[in-house]
Image (cartoon, rainbow over all chains, first blue to last red):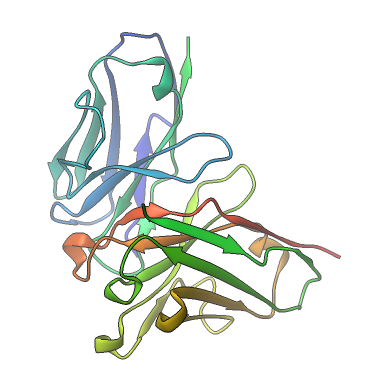
Length: 107
Length: 124
């Protein structure tokens, strides 16, 4: 199975900050990585797929990059509504797997 | 508007069985692979399994943790997805989300829509 390791698992940031979350895969997954945002009590929401393609309706302050085993999610200017937990997910092979999550909290 | 509405989550004893349902609307259900994803209380997301379309003979994939205990099925005439769970364990306690796969290849094997989830509690 492909393991996904996210770092940091927790970060404290302020509105307006640039935030970067990393996702490392235990083996190469080409560019087949998605990112989700989840708020407490809510379903996960797709932000980015295929490593760098922004899902329709997602603000352009979110961006993704990477290929192979290392990927990043960047929020260029953190907004109040962005405080949430972020998960990566590989869609390269079965079983589909998620990273452990990165919680972004208000400093 | 795409909607996925799960139901059937309850308190069940270890070793018991349960069937979850997911009612889909707002898209052509039969055109999509469908998945179940779960989240234990305070924990991360875990993929449970997938069912393909009719033209792939409704074949399924499962996570190792549920294989041989859980069965995914679908009824395209009712735009409904099901998760039959048996031999339930305390570690199966989670919110179970129904999710739509964006496409049929690995390039599109991510979840573009998810329901709000239904809570399954396995406890004596």
